[in-house]
Amino acid sequence: MAPTYNIAMVSDFFFPQPGGIESHIYQLSTKLRDRGHKVIVVTHAYEGRTGVRYLTNGIKVYHVPFLVIYRSASFPTVFSFFPVFRNIMLRERIDIVHGHASLSSLCHEAIFHARTMGLRTVYTDHSLFGFADAASIMANKLLKFSLSDVDHVICVSHTCKENTVLRASLDPLMVSVIPNAVVAENFKPLHSRPEVSANSFGHSPPPVRQLGPHDTITIVVISRLFYNKGTDLLTAAIPRIIQNHPNTRFIIAGSGPKAIDLEQMIEQNVLQDRVEMLGPVRHEEVRDVMVRGHIYLHPSLTEAFGTVIVEAASCGLYVVCTQVGGIPEVLPSHMTVFAKPEEEDLVAATGKAIAALRANKVRTELFHEQVKTMYSWTNVATRTERVYNGISGAISEAEFYGYDAANAASWSATRGRSGVQSFALIDRLKRYYGCGIWAGKLFCICVIVDYLLFVFLELWFPREKIDICPDWPRKTINEQKETVKDARSRW
Image (cartoon, rainbow, N blue to C red; front, side, top):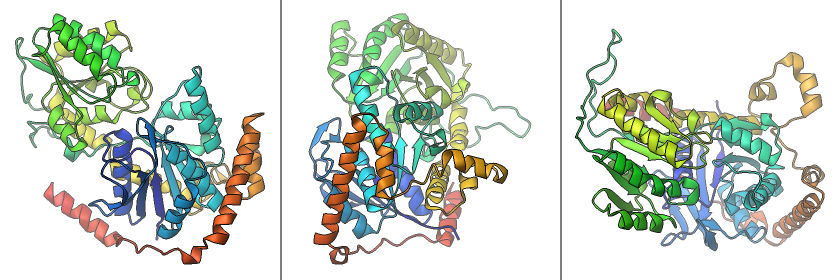
């Protein structure tokens, strides 16, 4: 029988804030719970949400009241989070702490404290960072500190894996690639038809809709309006696209500091009737916005995966996106038109997509069923569960890392048990000491202080006096099979 775990997902980024990381944590937690695991989420307090909340799927969320400083990231406190974190971990009898996002202070602190408490840890990276600017150098040093003592790392694309391995100086064997996914049922096209699929003779059915030369084509953009999401590029490209293609209009959803630049561009070019700005939209409203369009434009300057373009393709939109980061790995070439992250190339790529749609060369009505077969949260949860089994010893090293028994001796001699780190204080200090001439010594001091704080908490606030929370009823294997059977019958 497969083992089950008590898992804590920790990140600053979670609902009610919309976004890819937030959706990833929610969907992964839901599927892991469906597989019989207990999952809680630890995040900071949002306006109107403080304390403990239960989501409708039975997942408990701890909203810790910490100060938020920038883009929903909490102020790094290092040690003051430990008493609260320890209390939650003991109350919920957590086995594995799973942190998400490079810029989440709660994530890094949770991994640090969890190792001090003797808990297994996993980290998922959702972002790409550079190596030259000061902010990236600081972020990379912080990541190296956190991942020097972690059991395993998950990245959402192969490009993201390469970036993370270089930034944190990791053994590539410690890093697995598990992509994001999409709930295809929540992103159906507006005019979906069950008969729209290739028949048994390999012939495709006729297109659902034909676009005439003078029909209006709507281009949708749903993104946080920040510099790294390519908002400056979008601001420069929109007037030129509209000028080159008179029968086009834009729908832009999202919020951020760059929204004012878009509004000024609309005013200066008198495009109020051609560009509609919706402001922030809830995740459950994203599909309703997408199905109003024909093309999805994604001008991001850096992206590890880009879940939103999978959602757009599932809704039957032709995707125009920049060829950066892990985006080229996400969708097949017949669903996308790639552009360099430059104004000229983005305008040209959008024009190419408009021409292809007007000539009816793209079968967007087939995209939904194709995306449905490519991405599944159940598959993501199964692969994540295998990582948990690997770091907890439920499966052998050879099976987890993929080497054969003949090379086991030489492999262990050169690498050791890469994915399962020792909890011994001296071994932890050795790992942190290698992080740099000055940084290594500073990190070792942090580890020692954290260990002394842990001893103090164990003596003054003993575990026996902490109430254990009753678990939400878990699903059995039979219940899981019945759920899948009911879902298939409804479909």
